[in-house]
Image 1 (cartoon, rainbow, N blue to C red):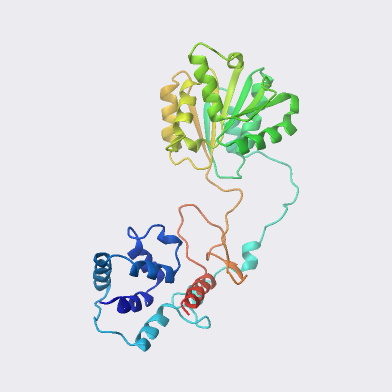
Image 2: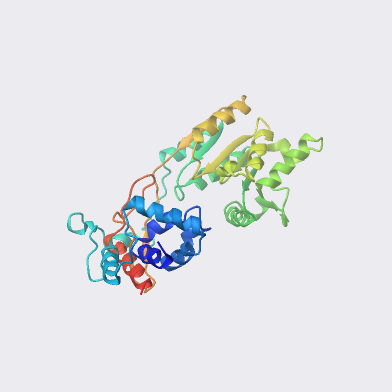
Length: 345
């Protein structure tokens, strides 16, 4: 099959098949549009193009004779219907889908209501008084409330608290947030380029700074603040699994004084039970309590903004649920096809 016939055949296929052909052959193929994909596929070596033809023949036997333009156009339109035509896979006739008004329902400032902690938050606050605690809960569910109450308990007992985060920007944000809540004289910050109120009872720092403090203590140069350290909070503790920086979190947990309570916060730890068991094994004098909450307080919703400015629901269901299947909204599917169809003409 010559390049012209191969090009015509590739034009007749949905873009998802082109990405399958490009996988392992074209770098970052997922960023390319249909025409760019076809151009890159045609620029491959003769052996690679022969392999693609063989894959095409496995999907459906092909004729090596030149195909008429009208046949290609008919075959192409079956995959890319005109905008006025409903998509053949659209479930609209049998399965009702949400509209944009349904999707936007509830967005805005909520009505004022007294704050009542959830049962899992109360459980975590009670547990941190006598054990290490891992809180695994979705974003926006209230992990910071647990941290704040734990800080209050520790400071009331005349203990120093260290709050770590993986990013300087997040550390600065927490510094401003806690300064407003506890008072500027009670909060300090230590990062690579900032050092304010370093003897405060509540210190905000990056995890690397804490690891270095613990390193110095093991080498015979202990920091006086470690003598009163009662609580260490590690925010975004899923960084333990990071290939490059995870060792910092691991060493910090190993080197923390055994009588210091640990509070690990994360929305995306994949194996919190294993982590709790590991913490108990390296800190045998202190048990580790796992608090796992899976219900999202702030729902996730998907919206598709078409290049022409049209806003439609991305999925048929309003809320995105973790590990649940989904189907594209019929109008979104139609817009996808319309955009793809126009890019070829």
